[in-house]
Structures are given as C-alpha cells and as structure tokens.
Image (cartoon, rainbow, N blue to C red; front, side, top):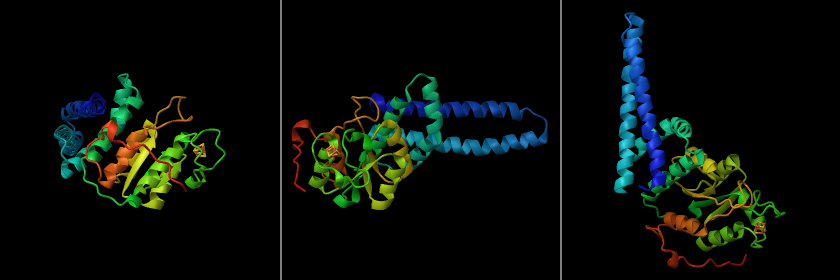
Length: 267
Ligand code: SF4
C-alpha cells in the first residue's frame, strides 16, 4: 500500500481501538455496580458491542488482505465497506485531532475506493458509463450554461470541458457537468449508469462515492492551480484510463507513451 492509502486505513484502525477502549471503560464502570439494572445493561451492551466490534475488525482485516494481496474477495469487501461506513466519521474526527488535514484523509479514502473498484472485472457498454465533471472546470468567463446541457459548450478549448467532450466522443460515454452533489445525484438517477468516472475535489468525491454506493465510482481529484472552485484542471490521462477500465480495455495503468493523443472530433 502506498502512504496515501495507509493514512485512512490507520485512522480506521485507530477508531476501532478507540471504540474498544470506550467499550472496556464502560464495562468496567457498569459491571462493578451491584444494582441489577446496571448489570443487565452492561451484559446486553457488551454482547451487542462485542458482535459489532468483531464484525468491524474482520471487515478491516479483510480490507487489508484485499488491498495487500490485490484480490477481490466479495464477502470480505462488503464487510470491509460496512466497517468503513461505520468508522468513517470517527476516523475523520480523530485524524483531524492528530493534525492530519481532512483533504489528505479523504484523498486517502478515495485511493482505497479506487483500488477496490479496480479489483473488480468490468466490461461495460460505453453508454453505461457516466463521466461526471464539476462545474469549476469550466472557464469562469464562459457565458455558456453547460450544467443545463453539456452540449451548450462551444468547444473553444479554453477549459478542460472541451477535452472531456473529446474523450466522451472518442469512447462513446455520457458526459455531464454538475454544480454540486444534488445535481450530480440527479444525473446518476437520470442516466442510471453502471459505473461512474467522477472528477471533483476531495470533499465532493468522498460524499459522492458514499452516496452512490454500491455503484462503482472511480474518483479523480481535480487540480486547483488558482485555488478551490476556480478554473480547475484535471489530468486527462487519468480520466481516459478510468474510462478504459470500465470498458474492460485496460487492466493495468497505461504507460505514458501508450496514451494516444486526444483528437477533437467534429460535432
Ligand atoms: S470549452 Fe466550452 S465550457 Fe470551456 S470555455 Fe469554451 S465554450 Fe466554455
């Protein structure tokens, strides 16, 4: 695992350890009471929590095994994702307290998500793939309303939306541009894709991946040379690789030299 993935995973383990510590403290406080009601509460709570902690622990162990061995083990994967959902808020909270930026932890989560998605086999039809881009990729001076209809773009080449159109035409996938989570969810509901290639910042990608589960989403972080939400950019090679993954054309990352230059097809 690379460092980025290790960060989120470490926060998950820390969260589980924190819960176990809380559980043991609670048990110590309640179990020593002579009052019968407290004892019943302690035993009931202990049985329930032990079960949840065990399942979460197995889920995290399974996730580590999947990431380490790079093999898709569906049952352990489901259990692992359940553990991630359960521990996510605590992992974020503990990570922030320890001085890690929320962006770094979320980027690490996105890396783990992408690896889990890439361990599955996909051979999808182009129209079953949705390429979802954020509005901040559009040049701020552009007068065309591309969130209503992405084909309002005049393909002037001043922002990455033009190149995304070229990619969408080249592979035949659907393209949509969303201003935020609500519109992104609308597009997913409307097009009902079997997979999504999503470009966004750490915050939007994280919530998007969680909101659309079990839909497979390959997340690509946007680049922000002018700061957040302003004339952002994207690595087009990563977008093309993600589309090819879902099409079943590519099982390993493409070497840089094998990426074909983007052609700009006519309308
Ligand atoms: S490429 Fe499209 S969206 Fe970007 S500035 Fe030109 S017309 Fe506007």
